[in-house]
Image 1 (cartoon, helix red, strand yellow):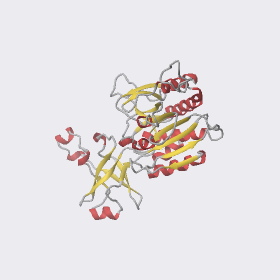
Image 2: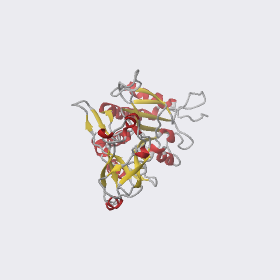
Image 3: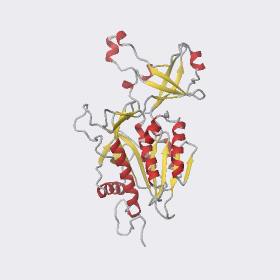
Image 4: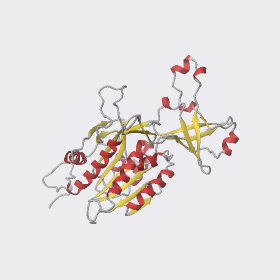
Length: 365
């Protein structure tokens, strides 16, 4: 939670993750054997196993958040926006946003909306498309906006901090839990192996531009070498009153991905994750969600293809300023991944067992 609180304070829409990179690099460097930031902006932290010949496992979580860029600065001093990632137009009016400028820091703005007293019948019945929305930064003219340091292309993200719902609920809300929470889990895992090397070599990837097409992880898939790859991301909970027969519940444990729009989880990884959970008495949920994708969709193409899967943390109100998670699911994700890593040296990675294959998938004899 300490890591998560720090990470959600940064504004980092896709392609503008610099502030998040700085925080993650500072947190990971003391515990990593090597740390690099590639040309794309991905942070790669490596913690070596005690033996060089141990398996290599990539774990990836993305740093970017859904947001916007400044598209136009009007003569009247209002800003127009272009979307970054899958945002729902219904929730955008009346939100507070940060505009991150090049030289003057973050500026507060609000996405304007008609006052309730001025609404007509058509206004009440329609959703305002994002192209018609505007941001008010308090300026009276275009010149005033420019003097504030705002420029076309500046990143824009929701305002928010990590706050607990109710009292001692263990459930927290913030923008950008997707996927700063995953990044926080990876940082926690790295700390767990500070004193004792991990049983396999860990390649922790904090990726960029996931929300606009898995671009950061796709770049890494061209040159990273590993035996196994896992993505750690958030997934959409449907346990609220709008839905009946919920599939994924907040607080019921991390999920083991079966399939989504980007990947079909490798059977060996499914078996390994479910087995790790069962061995440790950890409750998990099986996730089948066609309308979502993760870095696993890109990482499965590492080398000539590697066994790939994903672990998710259930998140209500995804891609909004008020995402909600249960801290026990985060803790469960740490336990699940740590257990999987301890089991990985002996895990049978074959897609299916053939009599002439060894458990590492290589032909025998």
